[in-house]
Image 1 (cartoon, rainbow, N blue to C red):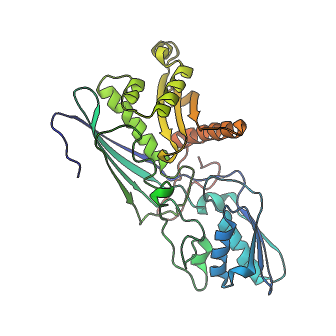
Image 2 (image 1 turned 60 degrees about the vertical axis):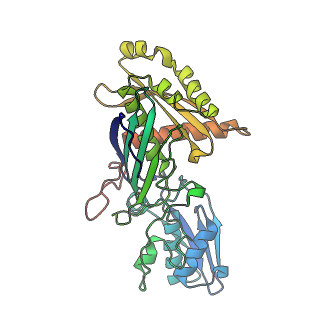
Image 3 (image 1 turned 120 degrees about the vertical axis):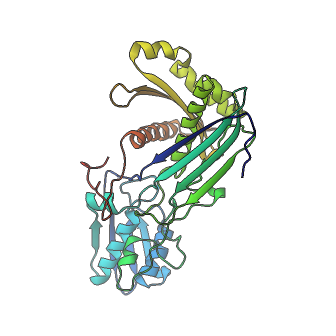
Length: 364
């Protein structure tokens, strides 16, 4: 365990996020044909070879007898219902050999049965010394696994229909990608700030009510939200400017540059005047992709008189050499819109029997 030095000002805080849905505009769809010679499947899967591996297990056919074609469909960042719809189509095609079968999930199917982004809980503890520097840090995160993609279960397929066959396979529990690939629940749990001592523990929760798999950023979304929110709490505790407090704990020059660039764009220095005049508040955050890739800093202007509204975002990124600027802009703007939606609106609702948020009226 991490010992606590005497004389530190100790602060603790808890953060969480609910289950989140991909909620793609178009529901999952697939086409399949089944003959004695082989099986063909058309799917908007993100991994044709991994899907083929699970189809081989479910259909009890050699993998070389199965061809999976990628087709354009509703996209997602991670793992939605595309592979499940492909298995549905293949099983139905097996019942009518020689005839093509098209399966289109309903909106209710998509929102209730696609894999969800894992719910998470984070507990943070930090100690400030007399100079207002962080001298002690503990981070504990509890989460489902963040990966249950096809082809990852060994001899057991991970897809939904596999558990409903006449000879069913056991349900598979989601795992986390290895830390070398960025991790899952623990992704970005290690702060990017220069701290003299830190202890980070990730707990994979095995017994949870909903099926989870990859959703954009995996555990980084909640971990970064928690860390950056806690940095604001620590800055307040030592009467420091949130920007200056972050900078005093940053050795990485590129992280410092993006943070200062976002602050300049937003007019951070005169924000208090604007807060009084406009009745808004300003917040900022910093992250680095998997703690090893691109840097991103954002400043948000927030209105919170009755409910929380994001008026404006200023975002600075350092992604290295850019070949296609439009691709970078689309990625950053899309991510900003999605995370505002996650933080302010989205939550999968369920009871002890079913998912309750299975339509646009219920989700978000």
